[in-house]
Length: 325
Image (cartoon, rainbow, N blue to C red; front, top):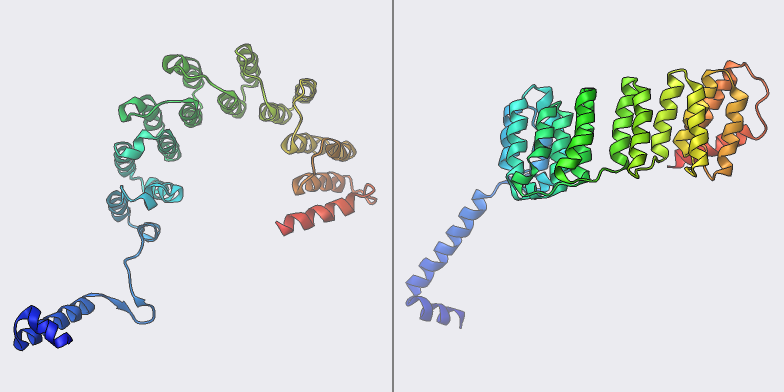
């Protein structure tokens, strides 16, 4: 019956044989054209992400990334972006970085603020500060709306310049220009930068000014300032900020306690550091390995023979919990 249907379709038995031979040849040619791996069967082309990671030649890396500009597996992968930009920066190919990132901004993903924030941060990591700030200023050209999120990203990158005038101008002028309401993260970014530059008086003044506009300091703000004043050997101000924080109902966190314990240990006040560690439990905060190691260092420097009661047990429990993680 099959032969009869084929004869009816192709006309004669000779035509049937010719058609069968043609089908066989086509199948064979397709099989021959497909590469096989000896052990794993059919071999497929390596994914773009694997090729990007393996490529070491900056020129080829640039071309490979450019060729996958519309590949969602690549453009949505944060590591692929950061790794590519980092390696191109290491090779001094900032022209390639500019080409890749500017091209990305012109694609549909350039209309998403989250994606533009990534571009700003990548420019910052490559040390291309001006490109990062310009990206923020030109967001409207890509049809992307600015919010405090992209503002904070540009501000974060700008603080790397240690240019106090530029940072201050950006913080005070740009929000008015674009109608952006800054938040406590904006303030904390600048305060952290001011503390690193050693201008602690300006950091304190900034807090006062921002509170006039309803932006209240959080535990990160206080912790940053307390740490800076302790390192600057101004414990009176650091302790005063601690008291002010508690009076305002801002509860210290683990980092805040560790900062103060570290200061006490550095001054040879191990017993006070141990008492402060005990106080952490009353705040519902569990000491971590950093806390215990600081106190151990403090007692070790005092050449203590007898440890505080219960200290060893708590330390062993903390170590066990840390190792289980």
